[in-house]
Length: 377
Ligand SMILES: Cc1cc2nc3c(=O)[nH]c(=O)nc-3n(C[C@H](O)[C@H](O)[C@H](O)COP(=O)(O)OP(=O)(O)OC[C@H]3O[C@@H](n4cnc5c(N)ncnc54)[C@H](O)[C@@H]3O)c2cc1C
Image (cartoon, rainbow, N blue to C red):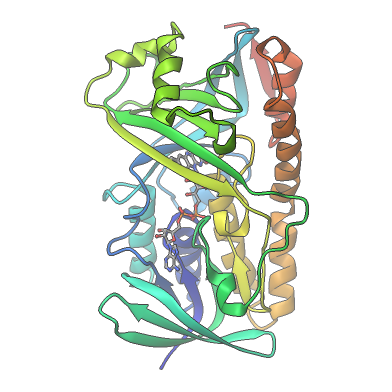
């Protein structure tokens, strides 16, 4: 029998950050990850995310960011502009390579004392009263381990299946799941100014989605992001190729060598921050993926940190842990509610309607109080 203060389920961005914070604060923490090495299920890619709400966390815990930029260039068939903003874009390398955000953060959590159990999945849980008291873990070699955690953080990503163990389903409170599909490549650097994000919209070629590329001193990353159920009968790679063929600025990436292509999808679920009185959901598992851009790493870092901090600050009082966590996540829930609204308008939009005022609304979501300047490119 193993006892611990916190069991974290899932070693992606949210679980790694939660484990790092808890272990640094001296709480006995076990992280279970179902893959056989850290972040093996996460493709090697560069996630772009705004620094908004996470810059202190990134600084205080020295989270590994591979680049940052205050400059982004936005293009649509109707308007183009350059955005200079107090909110930076962070570039975050994901996946199983040793220099990824996930690998480094997990390693730092282990150095702080967190036990990492790989090849491990939940087999069963025992609920007494409103608490999950016991979690039985099945290892790949069929060995079973029983853990008695005081708190559990569910960081399993958008395919979270924890609710099936407590016989609960997320009720759909007016939030049908939105599946976002992405396809792009990672490669050596592009011959463009470094540390700038270029974002393109064109609803003829990219229905309900967009195309972007970033370039850091060592790496470039380019991707399209589309809403899955808006796709016609062509593959996502064909959407990618059609767009770059028909966009003079974007087609420069056709010449990039050593491309490693990556595809993947994620789903903005109904929000579910807790289930039992000692269980906190974080990241994509909590339904925090932004339903407009399909961004989720900022939300994962933010919720991973605040779940851990709520536990560490109020360890002996479950009710206060849950309420302080919920309070901290409220700004993200508001953003996502607005993002859903804008997405429903955006998918219907014709190119000629993508005016500057539309982009102003789009960009005001996480940043209403920040200084932003839009200029013609
Ligand atoms: C192709 C693609 C491009 C993206 N681009 C961006 C981007 O540019 N910017 C951005 O902000 N976001 C982006 N996202 C979204 C972002 O990757 C996610 O929002 C983010 O990874 C969520 O982090 P997480 O920790 O919640 O889940 P994940 O990072 O998905 O981690 C979940 C982890 O839990 C493990 N796991 C699952 N079930 C179990 C279990 N039962 N037991 C143990 N372990 C388990 C998984 O193996 C995995 O390691 C993109 C997503 C995709 C697919």
